[in-house]
Length: 124
Image 1: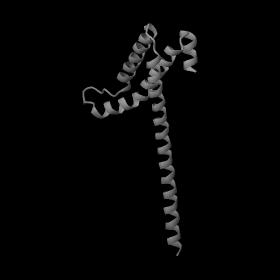
Image 2: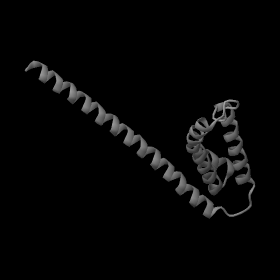
Image 3: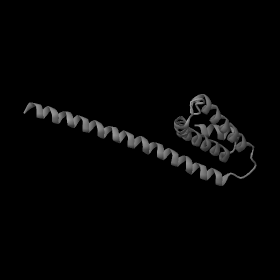
Image 4: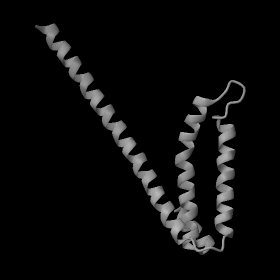
């Protein structure tokens, strides 16, 4: 949806795709940056707070978008590379969700099995 709106506004499919890829990269790197800065922050300044990170990432997105829109270069290679990077980010995120949900399902089955075994032992 974001891509379709940008493509219509910019009238350039390559620039719209590049901006969407930039948005994906910033979105998926925000959480990792937040976690790293929270672990490495000092007591005086909390670099991992959203009050600092959100404006920084918004400014990075704004500058990147401005540079993409104003460039006169052909963006074929950059668009292809960033689209692949974005797809890899989405696949990694989905696989992490799958692994976590699989782990939670296995823990529930193990827990219910151990309760069943304890009840059987108490009856005999």
